[in-house]
Image 1 (cartoon, rainbow, N blue to C red):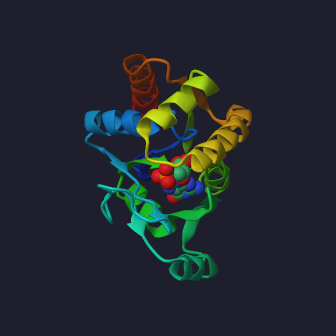
Image 2: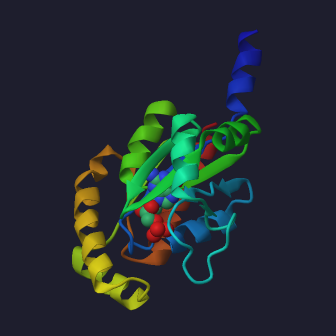
Amino acid sequence: MIQQQTIKQNSRGKIFVVSAPSGAGKSTLCTKIIARFPDLAYSVSHTTRLPRDGEKDGVDYFFITVEEFKDRIKKKLWAEWAEVHGNFYGTSLKFIEDKIAQGKHLLLDIDVQGAKQFKRSFPEAVTIFIMPPSIVTLEQRLKKRATDSDEVITKRIANAQGEIAQSSFYDHIVVNDDLERASSQMLNIINSEIADK
Ligand code: 5GP
């Protein structure tokens, strides 16, 4: 009986929660990691913000209205949700529960407030914070990316400082000073957690 229970528990997927200030290189890192682990799926979030050029519904995000989002808050359908840079973002509770019950490993890219909420519901989740080498580098990256106005960049930098101040909450901190080095550190973390299963 005990053995059966252990097997059942161990067959659940592992959850990796990744947060980073915008411009810290998280998307590039996550794409690299997903490509290396066929058993690791990206958890597609829901958002009320408008799609950026090239973003696809159901791939990058599920783009929904503020009304739909608030309705799902009322119905308690979010594993976590947060308002980030003036838009709502949320992770579907059913999606997470279904995937981990099927033994799939999941990678969540969510902000610091969301990561804290998520960890309360799923304490077994492994949290990773991607640290930019410095605020100056972060500002340079955001300007180079040229997807946001100066006003939005200033807002993102201010948010970044607040997020970095909370990084000690995370199980692991990966400094993204060099993409190859940072991705191999992340791969090691994920490999050792999955091997631990
Ligand atoms: P962006 O609009 O640049 O794609 O994302 C802005 C921020 O929202 C990022 O920090 C990202 O991690 C966060 N985010 C994306 N999806 C979710 C989510 O489902 N929940 C929470 N709490 N944050 C999210």
